Length: 100
Length: 274
Image (cartoon, rainbow over all chains, first blue to last red):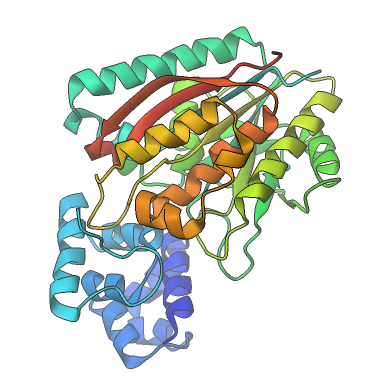
C-alpha cells in the first residue's frame, strides 16, 4: 500500500508538462521512480480510473488525471462507479462513495 | 484600519464551468447574489482582499502540508485548471507583498502560519474572484486552510486563524476586506457529486449567522464527513470568517442547492461594526 506515492505521481503529472511528456514517452521509466505496488503501477499505466478511485486517490487529484486521460465529466463519474462494481468499496481516504 | 468587509461564498468549479447545465432560475438567483456581494465589497472600498480558501493541491501536497498558509507576493497566477473546464482564462492577479508580510507577522502572534512567495490560484479563489473582482484588478492576498489532506487543523484553530487575520487587518493602515470560500456539504469528485444535505447546510448557516462560536465549533470531523461529505471539511473557511467577525452577526443573501454545481450555492456576509 503506497497510496501516498500514487497520489504524488498524479499530483506531479497534473502540474508538470515535462513529466507528462516523459510519462507519455516511457511510462515504465517514470513509474520506476516511485514506490508502487504492481496493482498501483498497473492502474496508473492502464489508466484504470476506477481502480485508482478504489485505491483511495483523492478526488481532487484523480479528477484532473481523468481529464488528462481524456475522460469528460460524466465518463469520469461512470469510471468511478465501474471501479466500485469491479473492485469493491473504496479502500482508503475520504472520497468514498456513499448512498445518495 | 478596522477590517472593512467580511463575507463568504461558494467556489465550486461547476459554478462557472457547467453554468448552462443548471436550473436557470436557481442559477440566476445565485449569480445575482454574487453580484450583490461584489457591490457590497466595492462599497467598502478595499485596498486588498484576503481570500480564505481551501485549495485542492494547487500549491500544497502531503509531502509538506501547512495547516494554514498566506501568500506573500506582488502577483499570483491562475487559475491552474484547464480553461475549457473552468471557463476562466489564466491570468496574473495582483498581490501586495508588503501588506502580506505585515499581516503575516501579526497573524504569527497567534497562529504558526506558513507563508508562500509563490502561489497558484485554483478554482477555490478564481471562481469567487471572477464574480467579485471581474477585472481581477484588486490586490488579493490568498490564504489557505488545509481541508484536503487529513489530519486537518481542528475547527477551533480555524476560528483563531480568522480572529488573527482580523487583528492583523485592524492593525494596518490599508482597508482590508475578507472573503471565505468553501463548501458547505458536498461530495465533489466522487460518484455522489451533486448530493447536497440542505438541512445540514441550513443549520450550519443558522449557527454562522448567529456567530454562535460554541455551536460552530461543536461539529466533529466524523459528523461533518457523515452529514456533509469530505467537501464539508471546508466549513473551516466559513468558521475563519466567523472568527474574524467575532462579536458580529451575519446574514445569508443566497442559499440555492444546485446539484450540477455540486454544492448548496451560498452567499453570506457578516455585519461588521455592530
